[in-house]
Image 1 (cartoon, rainbow, N blue to C red):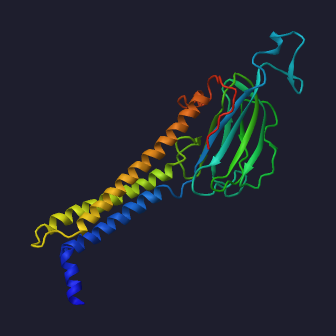
Image 2 (cartoon, helix red, strand yellow; image 1 turned 180 degrees about the horizontal axis):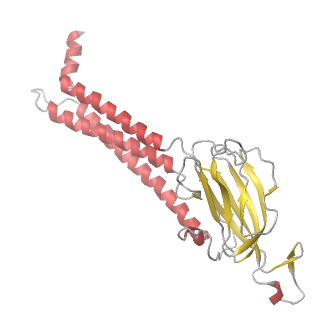
Length: 289
């Protein structure tokens, strides 16, 4: 038994190889945990513009002086509807804005630049206890707060708005306690955790490959030549790096495609920090999963 153990001990490079293996393992664990934790313990909100539908394309008074569109007696010129989905895209529950231990440092505010909002209704929800439909607007205005329920991971609400003016998506502002990132369009970030994980896998692959290469150099001084261990470690490292790189590129490309599709559907949403100052030329709905 001793001879077998001694043979194995010698074949992997002796004490230097054992020390390198331990150090490499520690580095691999640290790297993996670092990148794994980057995608954990985050609270984040995202939103998806689901579509703009014009009720009329031009003021009805230009068609006939006898025609009129009104809201509770107040005349409207070019009303339209817009739908948004607001989702918990983080990895932790977000406690509702009405709760004593709310996670909302600043409430979620919907702002229009070139329109006045007349109705805002939460029409659908997923994984919440909120009863719908729920109206969140009591009088016409160009901005209003949304009373957010507690959102579990991946939970969402859909908000349908009737506005009058230049057809546009609104700007959404919100800050969560302990987070520096505002609410933002979801496209481009849905696979962020996959990319963070792949960075960790790639780091482990680099460590394994480097250790295998170093072990190969160390064992080259042995009269018997190097064993299969360096080649195995280098192969594992190379496969891990290549697999992680391909997965990273794949997830990045899919997110870029979704982001481009959203930009085409709602170009004004992505113009600097205004998010909602412009025209929308498409009447059909646009959504991202």
